[in-house]
Length: 384
Length: 253
Ligand SMILES: Cc1cc2nc3c(=O)[nH]c(=O)nc-3n(C[C@H](O)[C@H](O)[C@H](O)COP(=O)(O)OP(=O)(O)OC[C@H]3O[C@@H](n4cnc5c(N)ncnc54)[C@H](O)[C@@H]3O)c2cc1C
Ligand SMILES: Cc1cc2nc3c(=O)[nH]c(=O)nc-3n(C[C@H](O)[C@H](O)[C@H](O)COP(=O)(O)OP(=O)(O)OC[C@H]3O[C@@H](n4cnc5c(N)ncnc54)[C@H](O)[C@@H]3O)c2cc1C
Image 1: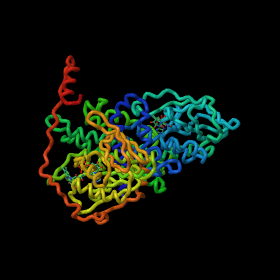
Image 2: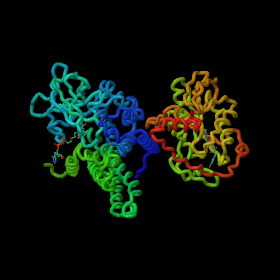
Image 3: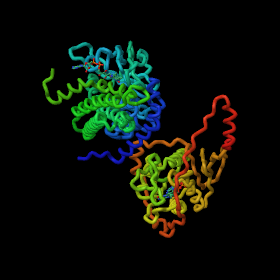
Image 4: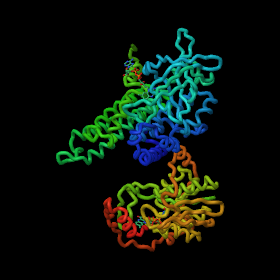
């Protein structure tokens, strides 16, 4: 048994932390207010090599494991969830499907700019009519000659409308209307005629993460843009989500840790009834609980990531980590606001933003309900 | 262009300084690569990127100071030289310069870069002594630095502006914070650093003895500087004239 990070991972964490303190922390509140992805910050993250962490060197990546990527996501999320999800989605949902399922030609075309962070990609699974039930996809792609003719729409797609978005990968029905529904993944380059990016959503949190509704009206892309085997689209997408869940858990842990850090300093300074509030058990026990849950959530995501890097099954642990960490983040952020009293409700205090940013974690990349369904299935309980 | 960059491992400047027996306490505290030396490393890397060659990073200090060198290697420096010896405990600026000079002569170079002053000892005397020992011309306080294969050109910060100084190589340059924007090491850089050559030297390797490390300076007393006085508030109606007076008083204009 060994819970230590490698020496290299430890130095990397401290470097990312100082980068976050220098370049992100002073700006996070302003970016949140501006509600626009700060491309300068994305560029700085790219210079640090963050977007290429888990990809091999031949595509410009660093060849790191999932644990290392998660560590970077956690560090950023301590301070800024919007940038953390931008990184998580860019790597896990944008570049990873191309790397895992792409042909050598697709990889050579699209990966280098995604891996370097000069471009971002979106991943469109969710539709207006359903996200949890991913099989309910209604978008269609019909092969006409040597082109796919795409019609339909996608909802809530992260990184899909930035000035540097190079493509979105979408799921679409590619069958000819037979018995079995055939869902495939197709790469749609940004700017393809018929591919419309809707206005950015006004969101509760994740303000400067880029999220759009996408519409496809007689949009044509080359047949060669099929990603992975025809009919494997859904299965491939769902396996991508297993890793994504671990990374979301890391993001949730970062947010919880950020709240905890704020509470530790605030409760040590703020006085009420002649004492610092950290001296009251009602406060100190709350903070002790926050620290405990955060630590356990961290252990859970790191174990799941470790299982993956050992090539062992990790679906159950990934779902558990995502479920526990995201619910922890929401609870910890809510309690952190409480510890801060009225100031916790004011935007100058980071816990206020963390609270707004936390809720999505129980929804995105599989809701808490879906996580419980997955875990129950892994436990071999009867399915409904 | 082969560049040698001098770097120092110093107590974390974000933590309060602890003094023990008239010395900065260095054990049992968190030590880091002197933030001021990151500019020297970046300057070396930029020159290498423009002109080719290698960047060697050199430090004298206790064995754990090798962390400062590793940080430089992960930023992209090519090789490291760490000088550590029990006889060097408590070395002063002059001893440091003498030892570094011996090691730098051994490494070979076109240009030596150091910080203007360290964040801990802060004497700003080491680089000048080093240049003397190496018999090099020195250009101090660089706020901009460029080079060709045979010379360096430096914007040298002065009290009222800057001088543009050109100097033939080999030479020693000290750089100010702000001469460039130091890069952060990437994970790839950290992994690559593990495989880079890193020499560990003692006085013996440099043909020096404990006598060469004899400290002749004595620190008699250390005291805290006076706290900065609070600023002067200038009312709106008299602002321009009053500010001009204050600036003149401060010899800023
Ligand atoms: C900011 C943001 C970014 C996003 N980014 C992306 C992205 O990049 N790509 C992408 O494809 N999607 C993205 N999404 C979509 C997200 O993944 C979905 O919102 C999520 O999967 C839930 O789907 P839904 O909204 O359709 O909810 P629904 O599926 O309609 O669920 C509604 C409620 O019903 C519950 N529920 C559903 N089925 C069951 C069941 N069988 N048993 C019990 N309860 C059930 C759910 O848990 C939920 O509580 C994003 C969403 C947001 C808000
Ligand atoms: C108050 C006080 C306390 C001290 N306490 C100690 C102590 O506890 N232990 C101890 O060993 N010394 C101690 N010193 C000595 C001090 O560390 C030396 O003066 C030091 O070796 C060089 O001087 P500096 O830090 O003032 O360097 P400066 O001349 O200010 O440094 C300028 C640049 O020279 C280079 N440089 C300086 N030192 C090194 C080095 N060692 N290796 C590589 N490059 C270097 C760096 O590029 C640096 O930016 C103390 C000095 C003072 C004034």
